[in-house]
Length: 135
Ligand code: CMP
Image (cartoon, protein in one colour):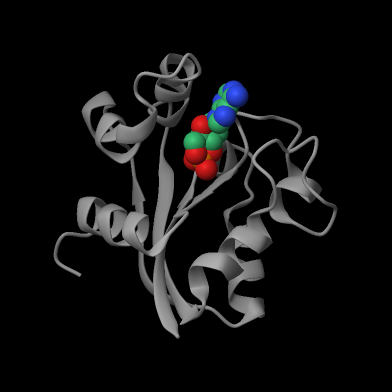
């Protein structure tokens, strides 16, 4: 089934000059870019995106991190795009993510893990609505 998913290349990806490398992986896999934008967000936007995490202990530093500089946000489209992107992204903790995945190849952190991908069709719809309300 064709799906759309929301992907964020977080500020560490932009700072480290990895945007091209990461986007190339999604494209090479066969996903289409339906929307793509370079953006800097404030804490309120971070709270909306991470609504399910705002009460967690790890959230305050995550909020600081995702608002610390520009990020790149995209909507990717393709067959089973949500699961495919999660597979390409790898496990949350870059130190534990499998080699071959984006985090496994490029991240050594549980927080600064380069990418976000929607975790379900419901999350994808909610997140796309927040970031690209006109899509
Ligand atoms: P993401 O897929 O964007 O979803 C929530 C984010 O919170 C996650 O990627 C990490 O950046 C961050 N995160 C999740 N768990 C932890 C943790 N235990 N410690 C620090 N950051 C975390």
